[in-house]
Image (cartoon, rainbow, N blue to C red; front, side, top):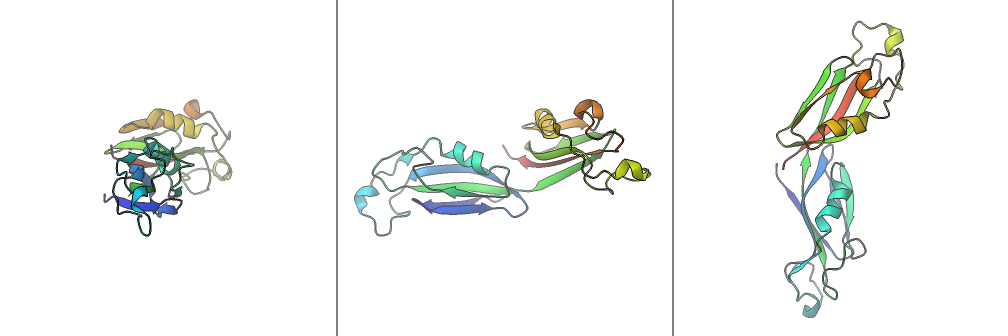
Length: 196
């Protein structure tokens, strides 16, 4: 999984775009680590400090971008603390794009998720949003409600799976409560695998 690197000069913006995959931030720094990057037309005294690191850069960029298909980052001291006042800074971000997986489990069965790294739960629903999934042999009355959403699904799946290498989640009313009585439901989970 090849990483990508972007450099954004002071006050610039850039969008990290992973298409259908999701962003996973590897590293980030707002500051200056050399005297040549983003230096065109600038006097040498504002390029002199090459040991300039904003300690909160990685956590802020990761919070903004991880798990999203795209995000826009801004190289500005108004977002990151100013690690070296009077020095021209830039933002360097290393990231990779992780594939998104979908697990669909019919009501009464167990969803089993497994990763080489750790699970990052993106979305989840225990209910029914179409009339074809998990519909074989079911009467129309059990599959016609396609606006059925379990309001605690994401929290429950995240609690059982987030940050683990594997987990099992029963697709049952006893775990999620019943968001639509009389409808045959399924558990749909979108997730990615973060390499640690």
